[in-house]
Image (cartoon, rainbow, N blue to C red; front, side):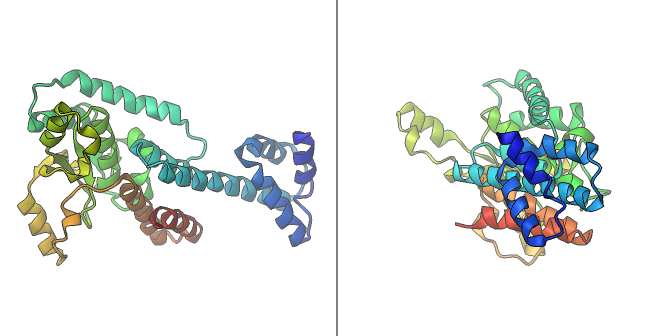
Length: 299
């Protein structure tokens, strides 16, 4: 019954009446990603004209975008705990057919290698040195200074394959790996240059000993130092952040010095892509990405 209904709708795609096409499109999009193989098969095997093929492509694109929008909405509403999931959703916007399990597996293998080098006796600085050595020396990740504003620098698939990214994509990978290894490293939404911070989790340990960990908010912990993922994890301190803001003629707002939420990081990733596509005159992508951004920013 399902295939029969879909096939019947697909045969109406080329109808010259725009009202009929809009209705058909709405119904087909409602079926979601499960009908994409059927649409692709029609595109490859049918002898319909160019309008039919153009509308098939439009339908597939609409279905894939709706899937990204819904998934991002669900991620936000569920608490946005998994930072990697947020980055994968944005990656899916550009690469809808990318094997996410394979990407997660690659990230997991990097995590395993870092874990083997860590131990409970390391200081915060020593743990960061291990992270930096494994990510930037062993695996060769680096900031892409030659093509800084290219959209590829924001997509996780490109970061993992090329080992090059912008401060945010590198920071998201770094933060995800650190948190999966129980290191209190979080993103800092510093204007013009995304960085990370290492929080003092002494209070957390004390509250755990007292059985009061449920009352602990990790984002309330003080910052020990900052990490610049774009410069191979170099260490920064409060005064350097203060000087950076002064040079940018920006206020010394506390939110520029402390940890931010995962939604802030993914919203910034989308905003970076908006700027990249504005420069490339891709109005279609700018419009879609601004809709995704509005979704994350709405209260």
